[in-house]
Image (cartoon, rainbow, N blue to C red; front, side):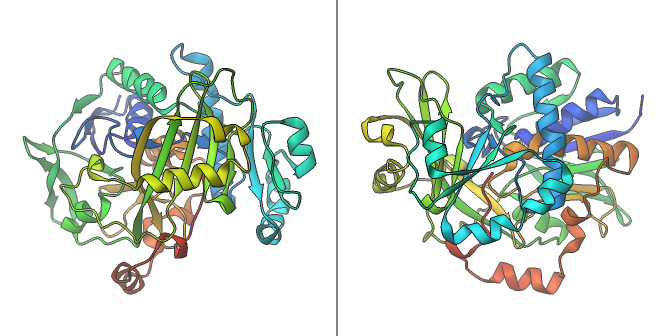
Length: 398
């Protein structure tokens, strides 16, 4: 058993998964610090949808490992289910088809099963879906989704059983440094010396890491998620990523439907260190417009009424890839952030990769494409200085 102390900053699913994987490895004293309540930020507002069919080899390989972990958890834990019974459907418009087709060779080389469906076949398999005739479907046979509240509760239960120390309602206010190495954190309540600091905070990364003069090129955008009241019968369909509709759909617990939608004309959000996610709001007409638009794809939406609304933030790096790994200019610091709209689906593998880095210094897959050191500092500053509406950002779906 290691004698090291590792502090994880951020109690969303990335931080929880990192704590879990470190504790499973007997990696010493593990401390998880959250500025609010565990899972109360973006994680509880997530859709939980995931697909293997991403746009980079690193992303696809990471998802392969991550989905393997979700299935293991679903088998081993009696309080969590990974819903892969219907796979995941990625709807492709004619204007998206050429770029999508360029990825098929990579999927084939990596052994990712997928099917190409025309609109007629989609409707035949799932009569509840009615895509336009000139649309196609890229079907991930082994994609799926999690219910975030169920997953967070199951993960939290296990990190407590494994002895992880958890401090809630304690924002990190500063870092400790010993010569050129990070050596601990100061919270609003205590000072903790540590051998390793892992920052898994979401949109708070910029104000937090600015204390160390680190500025990663990240943008945050508002995102809305709605859950319907129970339907008379289950909505039988896979989760659907529908970029051209600016949203997505999936079945939800208790015969409900979950609908997510972006607001393409809304400018980036600039959170401060004391920002709280529940401060966000959105216009009622955004929900109604999304319902009208997506009901053309899923006619059942015409008759639904809504039970709940969640408004959160998505974080995108300038190249659309996650930022994950050790920070070369600050020994002792690791970061895992900016997972576009796919943070929930990345969380299991992100936790494993961070644990591997801390305990072994190497990862089971090559994650050089995710390294925090890949950005040119001057270009990062220029990017942060620009204001970008969501429609012009590098947009990725789950």
